[in-house]
Image (tube, rainbow, N blue to C red; front, side):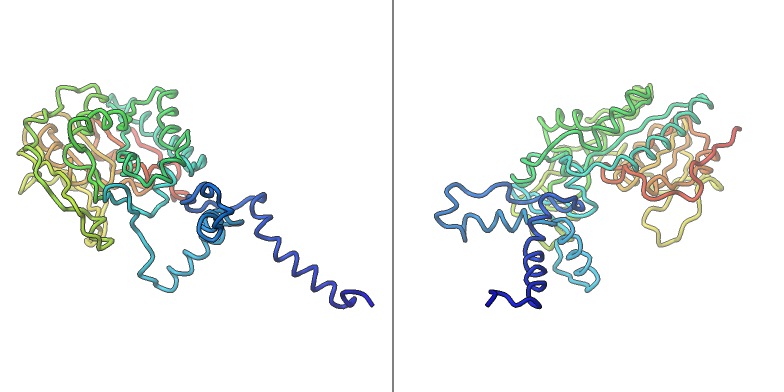
Length: 372
């Protein structure tokens, strides 16, 4: 009598196939997922496999990316408020756990097509400014994961590889001869004498913002527009402020350092608007564009950026420009017509690192600037 009756053999084959699926997941293509938190089993794992081997298996199973991506989509659809949006690092540091910022900063996520669209758009802006006798600069404020890399969890630091998206953008800009500010070495050098990025917030602090502004002015060929730190910043004071702390409900165990801003870092209370320049947006839009007249001599400076420059640079722009403006990059889908209306002498494109890649196909790609 056969071990398995004929009508059951197909069921046995299907059952074995299902058991082998996780194994196939180790050799077949998978979607990108969060980086594994355990990279190898502990030493002598066979002596206590449940304790020393299971964490490794749980972090490296087959089709891991697809499974975790599906799980995340499920908990979001169900409205699970316990899904962590914040990653805990060393010494109490907090990092954003969204937009694949961690994977991007450590080189585990590289998206050539969106970066190619970014490059095409930047070439367009640079060509427009060159044709109109102005200067174009691209500057990228690093993710907190990049700026405070040494505070990332140990497993994330071990996963660091190159090139990262930031590396590729810096290389493309250099090869094209487009003015580009790589903030990473600037901030790394400045960190030797004090923090430049919040430990409990997604943003750079006022000192980092000032470093970025001065670097942009130097790259634009106008070092005379830089603002000295001693004129812009007070001595550091302890602070527990941070959007990541509020987002996660985690109370920082030790204070960060804050640099209160002096007059050049403070936005004017009653700025004079320049009408008819900026695009109209909803009154509830957190990224409200602005264009103002300062009332003193200086170049016309327009910044296309995000929350790293929206308010933190407003006082600096008012201090150095005759006309200054800001609008959100909208992931490469900003209003090019506003640039034409503003007629800047200096145009700065400043998306934060996690917002560099262009998202989707803009409705009017590529935007075509008009002369005059």
